[in-house]
Structures are given as structure tokens and as C-alpha cells.
Length: 377
Image (tube, rainbow, N blue to C red; front, side, top):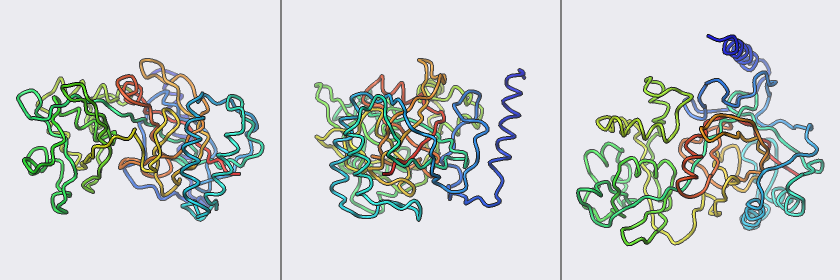
């Protein structure tokens, strides 16, 4: 082991002991097995950060920050304000503290709309640091996107794998992935939207929560999230790294797909994830659970038990190189527009990256740590 790696390991052990002390610390109720990322060298995690006593903690250290959103942010602020206006003055805070309502979030949104967003003066706002996954503020950042999948309306020897609408039967809705895709219990029930060439394309579309299907004549239609089977989600990436098939530092959607392409007899492993997502065709643009159009590198999915739809956050987000290696952090204004079956607790958010291959390449590499602050007036 190198001196650098040994030093990092010692620091991680020391930090874990500091963060693990329970005296006087209000533990965040984080479900086990979810909301935690991968441990590897240079994953963006802040080592030696002071532990927090509550899930949100006021931070007065910020005055001026440079944010890296660009013009995408203006678009997102307009859509977000439309959502906040629809919520009136109802309470927005999911926890007992801090207390705030949707009027508070509108004030923050309006404040940002009136400011120079390149160099942002935050002195008139209150920032509440988020607990993270470890009580030290380290938040696991993943990313998702909207894939484009080639499909056929009819099944043949090339286009084999169905994309399903949600069944009307309560019994059929709750079938497991194995029952649906191995036992074929939904076959010939007039639920097929189309058929894809590769099972991984269908699986990946389910993980992302939506996707465009492109038919043979070139027409495209968005398949939005149409519900799920209410089964527990299992991370195939975590399974493959735990079994030693892929190294933690190399895990990505690309490496997972390459592994299954090289091991076609191992597709049964995907059946270990019993969770199944159904789709519905729509003419709308990609939107999240808040019914707000998703904006690249602004919209995030999180656990609504901790952060409400429409909340605005300052994110210290990981920056990666073209190979997915961590370079640095940069500040971005982020907005809560979505959620997901694997997004549990205050220590995990999913950053929306856009549509298509380049967005997918970025999303597939993101598995690093940053920090978050809830912005209040």
C-alpha cells in the first residue's frame, strides 16, 4: 500500500470515529443499504469535517460564491416559481426543524431571479447545511438522464425485449422483475409499448425513470414514469462490486453494460433487482415528480422526507474528467424536482444530466461526494 493510500486510510478511520460518536447527536433516520456511496480513493469526500448534531445546521460561513450553472439556471428558476406559486402558503418543511413554507421558498426563488448568478452574494439568505450520509455533510452524488432507445412496434428476432405500460390489475402490477421478464407473465396482455434490441436498454430506461423510444420510421415519443411494482430496489452496481466483478473505482453504467455484454449468460443477475418500472407515452418533455420540466445540471432527485419539491439548494458538486476521475468541486444552484426508488435519506441526490448519449456518459460516471445547503430567506 502506498504512503498516500495508507495516510488516506488512517484519516478515514479517524474521521469515522469522530463522526460515529453518538453523544448528543440526533441521528438521521436513514434506511440501511440505501443512500450510501462507494468508498475509494479520491471520491470527493471531505475528510475530517466536523460532525453535525441535527439533520440541518445553520452555516454562516458563506458570503460570495461563484456558481457554474449558466443560462440553464434562469430557465429553471422560472419553471420552479410556477410550481411554488401553485403551492400557496402551505408548510413545506418535511421535518420539525427548520420550519418554512412555500412562501419562504418563493422569496428565495425571487431573490435568485433578481441577482447576477455568476457571482452570487448570499449574505441576505440563510443556508442550512445538510447532514449527508455520515453526519459530516458528505452527500453522495449520482446522476441520471433520459436515454433514447431504438424500438419496434412488433416483436421479432432482433427486437425482442418489451417495454411495458402499467397493468390495470393490482395483482399484475406487483409482479417481480423475474415474474415479468423471465416467466413472461405480462406477455400478450396488450401492455407492450414497443420492443427493444437489448435487455440492458430496457433495464437502464427503468433505472433512469423515463426515456425516449425511437421507432423504425424515425419518430420519437417520450415514455414517462408510469408507476412501479412496489418492490425493493437493489443496486446492481453494488452487487457487482461486492461480488468482485467490477472494482468500486471503475463502476459506472458503461462498465456494467460492458460486463453484461461480455457475460451474456449472467443477465439473470439483473433479476435480483425485483423492482420494476412501468411507462406511459406522453408528448410532454421530460419532467420529474414535481411535474416541473427537468433542467440539465440544475434539477435533482432526492428523498422528499427531507427536502420538499421546489426547494432550492447550494450544491458543492463533484467535477469529473472525461474518464470519470474526480477533479474538484464547483458550486451550483440546484432545485428539487424529482425522486427515485434508490434515493433514500439526506445523504444521496441524483443530478439530472439531460437527454441522449453524452448525458448518459456523464450520468454513468458520477458516483462521488459533495455537499448541500438548503437556501432559506
